[in-house]
Image (cartoon, rainbow, N blue to C red; front, side):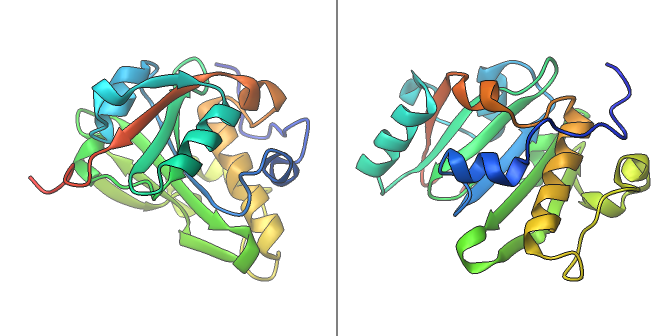
Length: 193
């Protein structure tokens, strides 16, 4: 993979989320597993519930099923998958990152200017490592990014999404939103045992 430590997206990540209807509630995880089924297993998704669909169909199904957590899971880049909460919230246990797997999570609600988990959390090898932006392993990717209330909410979210793109090798773009993925149901008791 080319050096992405200073790469910038062609379009504003915030504007794309806004255009495609995901900005008011964007709850997402990037998983360093290129296989959709294996990525879904990280969240204990019901494999029998898998419905291949595009983003519009995922929105429609999420509107029809407000009782379940629904995740739209699929390819993000060559080595990474992405999981986007379409209904409910994205939940998993840190053990989902076992076997030297990396998972980054991000959640924001633009309508109320809320940024959860200090922006972005990093899980590795079954452990919560911490807030992604301050971890030494990724500091080369963060040097030119602005985060925090001084930068403003919108710029902070933009910076975290740029950071995710730099680490995973792909930014959000129009092709990303047009790529079909698989909608999965997460059983309510998925993490109770």
